Image 1 (cartoon, one colour):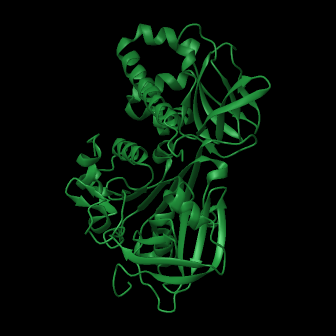
Image 2: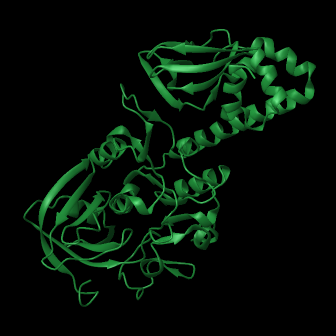
Image 3: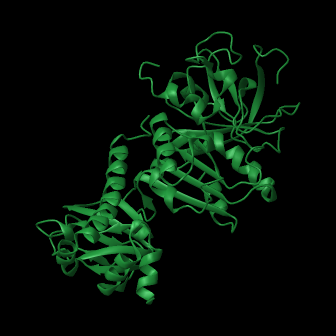
Length: 150
Length: 273
């Protein structure tokens, strides 16, 4: 088992994937490190990668001049970069490293045709992705409640 | 406990701390120590304004030092928050049930609080820290509206600096320059280190937050039976006589405010209650 395979298998995103799915993903994965305050994605930039955070914290931000609005922070264990799988394949917001970040980066552009070609793997992968989206959507709704208002 | 639960006692305030822009901590030192269980509350009386139930946020190992933390959100609590050192705090109690600290022995403890909800849990954290060997891992997950609304910031820093406590703080909206977590408190549950099969979760915050916390706990394998929460209603007498705090068949001042979640979950789903 390669280091990448092992690292992917440890990530919460892979919890429901088969070992052969993880092996396939590891063929398309690499480890990237980003310094604190470094921009990882920029809104409207080409969305090519899925990021599985291993260490550190990132900020999802939106630029509304003159403000930069912090929408949410994500810690190690989070998955981001869904825009890689949906048209128009560009980022919908900025992602910035709030502290030094290490991530497993899966080449989504290479992965997309594999999902089509191997539909059973594609289904399991999309279920894992949907679970992440579902969790984040629920959190966004709760956030909208403004829970602690006086 | 005062001799007659309806007769309040008056104590001079010996210390006052401003926790946030609208939240203060008041400290009194009764001549006769007032023993309380973490999670219990006192009825605090703002003269000429009224009474409100306020959880005891102090150290249960120091019954001669009674600590209350309250948020000024109404006529009575604004009156209480305006009290200064040397002025009298009038109170009666303690009332109600406490957190399940006996049941939690030998287990990991999850303390999950939102906003002022950390106040009723602070005494629990202090108890667990005093009896650290009796409990497993301790994780404190705390959410607030903004970083300016974080209560007990000094405590959180001190607890987070220990090797045997995990502290995760998150805010719904950070100020410019905020470098901590931003997001709802449910988002940090799956990052905490605990055994979902046996841990006990003690939760306090707005009811919608507590419902969703229980849901997020279920998603990581914590059963409802392992979840305890504290309810708040319009308490008046404190001794189950007046019925103001009735929720279904529960009189929260006596039967609560701390409940096993399954006991009150059906009531919390009834929209008219």
